[in-house]
Length: 178
Image (cartoon, rainbow, N blue to C red):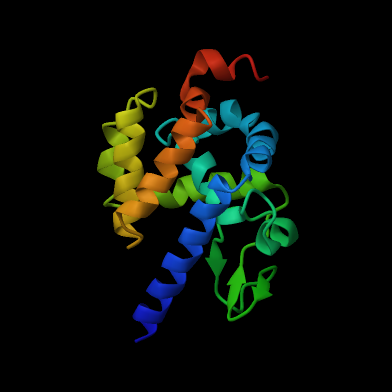
């Protein structure tokens, strides 16, 4: 029953997210990409196996373009949870979230989580990162592992394509951002 309620909430939340992108939030998304896209080169230096475009799209969704309470209070753009006795965790509702000194630290932690997932790792290992198909395989594997479904992977890919996030995986493009 708990899983079913969680699934319904997740689907509603994702539907709201998808509608928001289509209902005039593109300026907010562009601001988010401008603010955090500049960290692509640093991210790629530390985590060359994780497409930054995928992380950026996930950050856009999970943080509501940097406007969620968790993103603002904790610099946590991925809703990464900790247990309730973790010192420095931020309690919100029934969950506690990691607090980071800077949002890029939450990007680094997200990359570590993704890299250590045994079901996502094969998609990462076959990834060239400049090909939309590779990013789609990673998004699909991630969505399946987290029981988010095909619509979630499609939402990630919609962001990657609509906002040209795949450019941030290209070293020639990111070298111009420094």
